[in-house]
Length: 420
Ligand code: NAD
Image 1 (tube, rainbow, N blue to C red):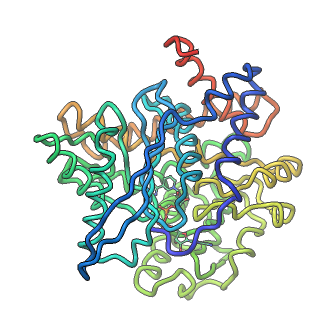
Image 2: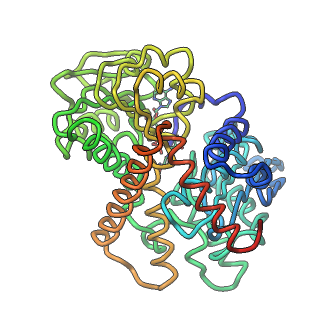
């Protein structure tokens, strides 16, 4: 769970539209296709009433944006955060369309959010908010309609409430309506490690093409949460040297390499990675500017921007977080020969694991964790190779290459369905 305020690009929707425009131009598609894809198919806004512990009724605003369903039912997380806005939810739903298309999952893109500071709510109030939000959007979600999942400040418990509320409405259990559920309700343990594992596998694949392999390569990870910790752990197991990590309180550096599990233990027991004794303390800005082979921003949006992009010395940046590199920074990095592996590829492990959970739920079979992990690995390796191969031929940055592949797939589905 993110602990600090998120930095945001000025307007995430504008950013998403600009990225779409670049892909549409690169593919030579007609203007009307851009106009179609720019708009979400549906945005639901709900006012959610919650009877608080003090007896008063509070109202929260919530949204679900359903961007595109050409390839299948909408899929994407739901976040609870004070930073949520309708523009952000629409942008995130568009990014999910591309992420799902790139991974060749049978899903369109969706995203939801409730404008609330969940840390101010009791567990009981949070449950009521979750149930009331889901009930309010229930007519628009479903196993074959729209399948939400956890995102910032929501988790498997939230999904259990969503699942229960929806099943109560139907009158029977509908396991596949949400993913990221607790194991006892058909969830998979690999969901926890999936995004970080995916970031590690993508890093390894890209390193094998650009850096002559991952073994011995130096890594800096900004944001030592779910994504950052597992990315560091798996990269370390692959033979890379994690020299620096950070969280919202600051960073640590040891040129001989850090032990990811020991650092995680320190963070759990003493609140932050900065309390790890066998390393030098550094700031988050210093971490981003380290001379390392791979830099993994795994915390928040917009951390690599026009202010610091010229000072980045990493050879490759792998976006574990959503949107950590701004469009302006992208251009500077590209001119400086720094390769950015885009979020829609690098952090797709989470939604790929969600798909495995959804398939499991639908066929009523519980795949073993090992089998699920093998499927996840294979899918990420294939996705990465596909993007890297296309990128090498295309002479544009890897983000544009990945977006173009994704947009092309969605447009093909829209054409063949007769939508355009
Ligand atoms: P998390 O809350 O588990 O971890 C975030 C970490 O970032 C924490 O250690 C926090 O201290 C740190 N952090 C916050 N602000 C920071 C700052 N200014 N500087 C340095 N560190 C800072 O969150 P997460 O689930 O790991 O998600 C991280 C990012 O990855 C988000 O952008 C999220 O949208 C994206 N993402 C997550 C998943 C997933 O499955 N968890 C999937 C796809 C994308």
